[in-house]
Length: 285
Image 1: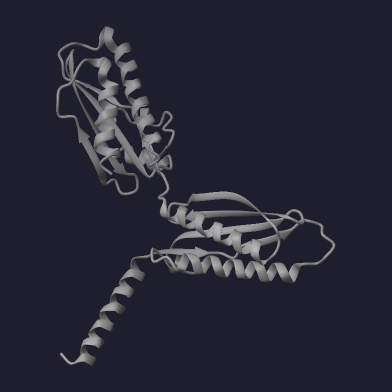
Image 2: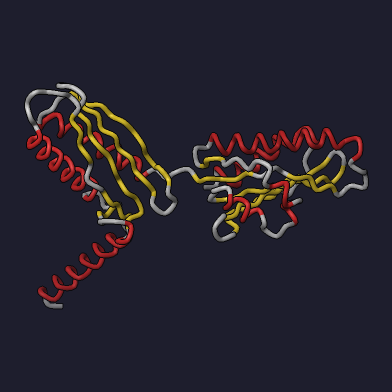
């Protein structure tokens, strides 16, 4: 191939890769920050503050836009997945405060909401503040917001011939421990934000047999996902465990797990459930 033709092909390849990267980047909209001066200083510094705020916003957009993971867009209509908003307030000669929030637009969630203070009111102090804020914003954008998860009470499926009768109270106690243990390990993972299910689940009866009705309940509660679980008693000293995770908007099954093995007696239900959730849901992701 002629050298000029080779250069042309290489150029087309670079341009196509750049375009693909841009299309895959996350859209971020950055609104102009507000500015308030409550320092009661006698000198009118409006012009200086407007200039510094404009430079601050230009640098913030430049820094975030320079990261290939993100692309700056005007609004959600233009494909923004996140919006950055904020304001700066001067409270005294040497102290200013910056309030910055990052909103995940689709989920209507606050990914970041922080208040910073910085000293000084000159070009250098504003530049230092912008460098710090841009790093904080990019760290928030790179950290996915916790998933709102509705964890419903684990249910008992007793396949033994024995009636619940006298053991009903102890079964309820062990099931409560299972649910509490699972909620605790999911909450501590940092990946999920637990939604209070209250008494909503009880209105639907056994969730394991309702054909996915827990999805609509979870959605009504404002959850992104729902989780149901069941303890299957094989004998008075053996049981198996299972769970199912669904998308609360579509009902799609996102994950499921089953112990598959017969385990010990009822007092070990909690340990088995926590281990199953940890292995199949938390660590596998």
